[in-house]
Every structure is written in structure tokens, then in C-alpha cells.
Image 1 (spheres, rainbow, N blue to C red):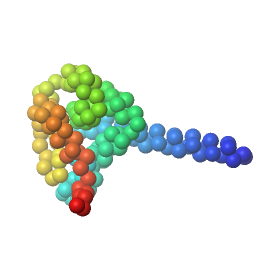
Image 2: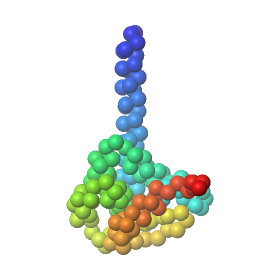
Image 3: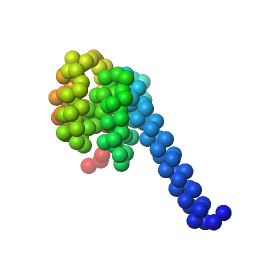
Image 4: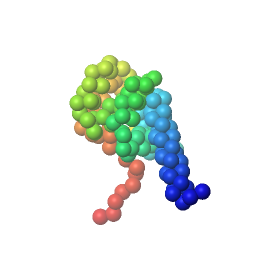
Length: 145
């Protein structure tokens, strides 16, 4: 096998692997039943949905991924994750998707060790200020000054 062919096969394999990882993150958000921060406090652990959201936001095609999450979510939590991300990257698309969500829909939100039910309408100020995005993506790491 030639070196060029081996390099090409390796690149294809890595590309497929990355696509599968992206699809897994999207699937986790589509199936999400709660909006969770990436770090949960009791017991200390990483939230699969919160971590998947962070991974999706780091994807090159994150807008398309978030639209997939929004369109295919079975629960309000998935649509809320999509709204949180879309607000960060495309306000007009965020507003379009928001118009398709009932403001009274309830969703469970877990930040750290605090969990509570809230309506989508009650979450809008936190989504639009970016505070819910920061809560979800916070890793607990602090920088030394």
C-alpha cells in the first residue's frame, strides 16, 4: 500500500470517527429530559447532556447541529439546549425557533446541585443574558491571577 493511500485512509477514518462523535453528542441532546450544567455537584460528576452541549458548541457545524437538536427533540429540554446555543451564534435563527416553542412548556433545570421546574418563558431572561449558557458550560476551573 502506498504512503499516500495510507494517509488518505487514515484521514477518512478520523473524519468518520469525528462524525460519529458529533452524532453521539447531538443524539444526547435530542434525548435530553433536563437542562443540566456540565458539572453537577452532588455527587460531583459530569453531566452527559451538559458535556454534549459543550461539545456541540465547539463543532464547526454547530448551527446545523443545534437545528437538528431543535427539530428532532422529543422533550422540551432538547429544544431549550438548542435555543441556548442558537442565541449565542445566530439571534435571528434563535428568534425563529423560539416562535415555535410554547412559553408555558415546563422543563427541569439542574445547575450544580440545584434542580427546579421552570417554564420556557421564565428561562428567556437567562438565555438572552447568556447566564444560562455560562452556567451550563462552566467547568469549575478557575484561572490564577
